Image (cartoon, rainbow, N blue to C red; front, side, top):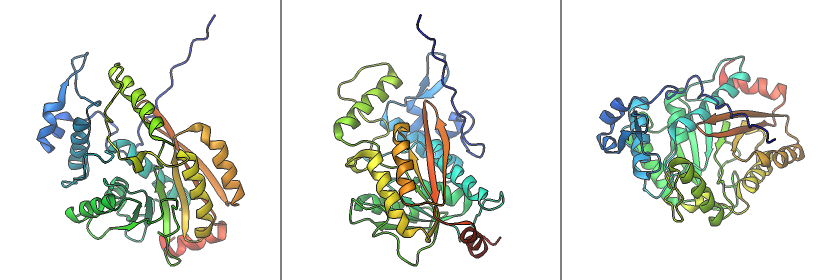
Length: 320
């Protein structure tokens, strides 16, 4: 007799996530009127958006940023990755919780708090949410000059973001921190959503699975519903190589940053990641499970600061 598989319990969005409840589609249609053409009843007669359509997905996320975050100018090339806003916001909120755990339960806020977004992308999404929610400042790095230019334009086009996000071009695609951070830089955290796939073939297979899950249809040449250029989706060695390289480089900047963090999509990569963290002799490592919709993932965070160094950091930067 075959065993009955228990359904996987979906983790709800973070308690401070603005999209924890169902979308107010009426309000979103007002925020971005073009979205209305892509809102149709599902099999249960409830209005929903066609999540397999990249145009609809981008309009939905533009509407979410406009209505819930006050970002009225969010324009970037259609071929670039369009991030799902609720999931990206969750990462920022869990990083805020991580900082609070190191700060007697209080989330450090304000312009003195600075994060580094490794791979800011053309959409600039992590800095946008961090600035709006916690008034943080950001450095954003990317290997693509067009993405850097797009992120800079978004920051300049929205009053709430202006002069709060600094973009730096990574000229060596094989580096994560080298060439971006300087000796004098002090950052409170990093965020990173590494390229997931190791090859174009692997990326195509992932897209096939995603479209089939969304529509129930098999399509040999599917269109990425969230779009994405190759540097956003693919890197040599995939997620594991990217993260282990980031860990190796982080040791050099151990006194420049309180918490290094990255998303880890593949659970099977965790063992190798933990070994890499042991090798560089971190002081503390945390794994934070997060998940939205049908996807479960986690944040891995590490610090090289011991208790005395953490106390000094709080006193000088967080006023505790």
